[in-house]
Length: 117
Length: 113
Image (cartoon, rainbow over all chains, first blue to last red):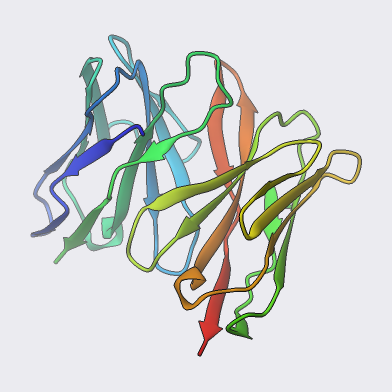
């Protein structure tokens, strides 16, 4: 099946610093990847759609200058949380899928748990 | 109104029991429907897609009622390993892409020995 990896799996950083999270599709090419955020006991919320070679599309309420997305290749998208604050502490998950006109199944990376102190 | 609504549970059932989860969605133009399971502190994993004619995968049966905008998941002969949060997922129709998924808040299941 389709495999998506994420790195790092967890990170602790100080308030005001920036954190970069990588999402890779290991056995397929992904022109589109998705970034989600999940707070404790809540469901996944889509943050943005990452498009290879073009700008990301952000969901309403998500600050594009705070959450920088770069999708420079067909197998890698990065999410950078700039000037992180404690309220940014969350579980960040990326997803991608073979798509190709299929039923839009998506496969998720293992997630990155961010704690901002 | 939430785009995808689920009963949050928790459902606590004994091993071997049959348990059913329900889900409703608000966008009648939605095209694709899924059930994912998410274990604690892990990523969601696709359990099964849901088709209009209903579909079964071993102990799991999914049903879709487009007229009522209702999706269900039935788990028979539940196992301890079925304990997880079950997410009802619908594809989101938005400008530019039909591939975005909208997640329900999940239904927590605990199967007791």
